[in-house]
Length: 589
Image (cartoon, rainbow, N blue to C red; front, side, top):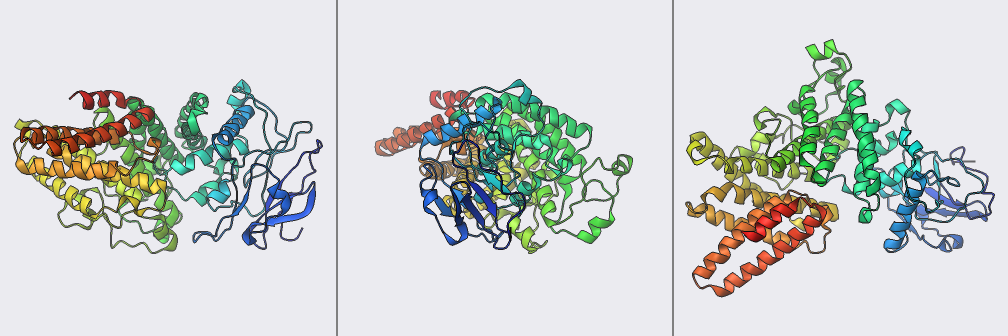
């Protein structure tokens, strides 16, 4: 078959319905689509923008070319979904139908091994979920996928609950729901490698604890809550597989990722104590592996290769000798080092978020951390990363340190810094007056300088390329301004400069609020509500102050800002109901 992969040509469906195949040409590196039942000679070469007439007759699809990317030089295919919510609803019904045990005619496999055809089942064109095209990744150059549909049946079969591996079409759909939101959950990995690993031998694939956590979040992000009825099942499977991973010391990197993702899920649902419980175990384990002490982002293969399996920085330890293989292996290349650094900072973020939400102490102190801040994946891929710009958490509070310059930070690094500042200022603001020692004031001033410098160097909200970048920058700006207000809140009535700093921060926060009218509140972090409450307190103070000096016009403008802020907070409450208590406080005070 020339440049085509083997095993791609199946018998056409016996019921005479249209059947489409897509396959990768090894010679050209392009995806091609054809209908080998009715139009065996027509081939769509996506890279060359060819579109045969028969594809236009396919009701819910239109061909479009996905340009090659710098990262992989791969040209994928995108077949658009049906326009409007009806298309998404139909796709969700199809997923639920499969989970009810309905058979497929051949399966909807996206870049992975195809499922066998079941004669006699209806074969109707349906929406297409194209993971490999969306992310510019093809795990294997000899794979195909087909386009078919499921009957419309609700429910989840008991027999399905016992399966360790989801069918590829269901797996890919849930991954596709999750990946656009992965940055919000801190899942910073090499997506190409992750997708490619899904079809490795069973014990080399991502551990079920990670996959079930991803499926769970995929259901959470499904449009309109259409898959919420599947969340308890995936939650149960995630919990049990986490225990299995730890018990057998199996793919412990996945255990850490999964624990943190599960904590994120609980936070999203307002189940803060459960989230903190799950993440605290991950933090302790990450520290036992030494992930809080990765002081260089530069991969040194020769050094790592000669040391035994053990904790970072990958030296032989009593623990690694006593329980060989039970700790994390050293990174085999720069990408694995990148992921280990990001695993630590993910556990850090979820630890700090849980502490803020519950009021419980965080599990790791800033002073214990020497792991470098997250750096862009591109630097690890290209081998351009150096130790010249290394910085970690405590460097932010050193006056003049490069860690206070946020202009070149990655989005993940900005999230880490902003959440660290929010937790630190929350803690400082609660120190009783009688305990404000000279050490307290040194920490206060260092934190205030860090906030001021970072706020000055933050990238503009619309400097990102897409909605995920924008929502992440909204998150960062909101946290930095909220942290400034929180730090100065105990001194608003006694120190004029504190009041001035808080008013300035509230104004900057409102500039952000005024830019987010068209962004779905599901793209925001729950803890943004805490920062907005701080902003609302300052706006109320300003409104009363202006009224007291007969600045009625200024008071009306501030009141309008307050109304706009409360409207955004109500939108956020629809996503995170637990914010109802905080919103009630903001309205009543």
